[in-house]
Length: 158
Image: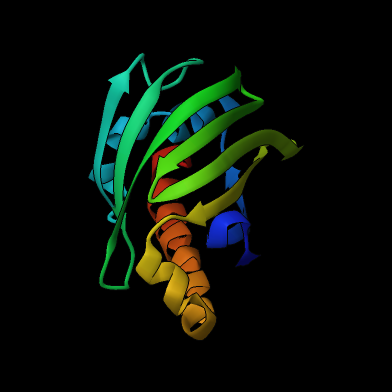
């Protein structure tokens, strides 16, 4: 987390999830982003505005709210997709930057889903309070991702 260009506050998060499941199943559930609001409580709204949500050029509008009293609205555009390997997303809106899911078998029967989230906030209020609240903002992101992991596991490990 730090000061980026034009006074935007930048964040770099890496999330490492492990599942006892088939790679194809983890891939299909993680990439079915339109269904996130049904199982990931922090995703308030997801709407595919272009494409199928999985292939290059697709755009997905998202509203996400963590434990802090604000929602983030951003759009994700699929920039690269290699089935069962990785998907690269470009974010615009309240969060600008990139997200990258990487999928692999960590060992037989164990799938590793790694998410790199490199973004900057465009909300001036968040950028002003970051020096005072950077720990709270990082914990908020970590909690959102922990909620996603806890909710996703039953869907892929059943």
